[in-house]
Image 1: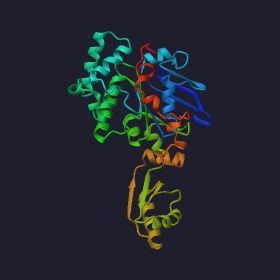
Image 2: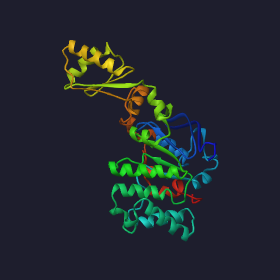
Image 3: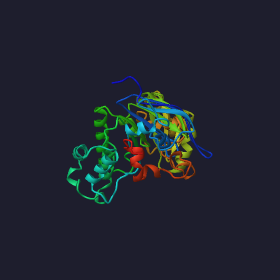
Image 4: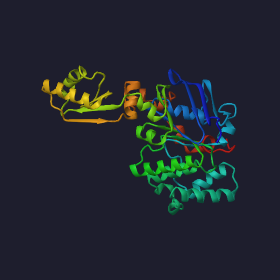
Length: 348
């Protein structure tokens, strides 16, 4: 495997009017790995993917995929990448098999190669039994799997997955995670955007935390969680009044807590000792506890510590993922875009 990065981003900037969707991000992705972009709606994740997949051009900075400049060598980039957006970009009036064969024709593969590849992917993604049914009869999980299969028809070396499990039930999500692991085992490089902290923790070898168009932290999930200390103490209360009153009492013993609803989250180095001190302080203040737990820090705790807010929040001004042109993620959802940005082998 090459030591050269599969994806390189330096000082990438993209503005939509007054909205700074990307404000100078840097990334480097090793080949044959999963790299996660973690952040809430409005953070800039989808904008970064749209630049890297040549859908839009940056205002400043540079980006390369497999050593190819995404602006100057856009056609060559598109021939080597796949994209599965936030919504399944498949034609509901066609069958699953017809969808895959259509993508094969758009990527200018021979009819024989397309037929064999479509059959292979339908089998691999557990869609063979439904291959000749129209997609409008598919479940959400089946459509998602078909969309991912379509992005792989031309065997891309780099695959971009933009929030691939949004809206999926837990079983479909776990199935998709297994498929992602198989792709990486076969040597595919994946860049994954997600709001789901568990997903980033499970799949990504390295990840960047993005907030308001900036990379605010980068590293392995373990490295980022290690920045918080050893333990998270959670103290729950039965009513809002008790929770608010407890903030000051607990703050005198363990400062830096975050009240989320009726649960106070505190990052501490010596969990058992601090837990006893907290309980004594609450008992002296005659405040009852509804629940108490000690656990290892999660990526949600990391995001909260780094940004001051949680990872899943409404996007600013209704703009989806920092796309200040107001069209949200409509490009990713538009089936007509697949030949250009997703699986084009010179079709654009």
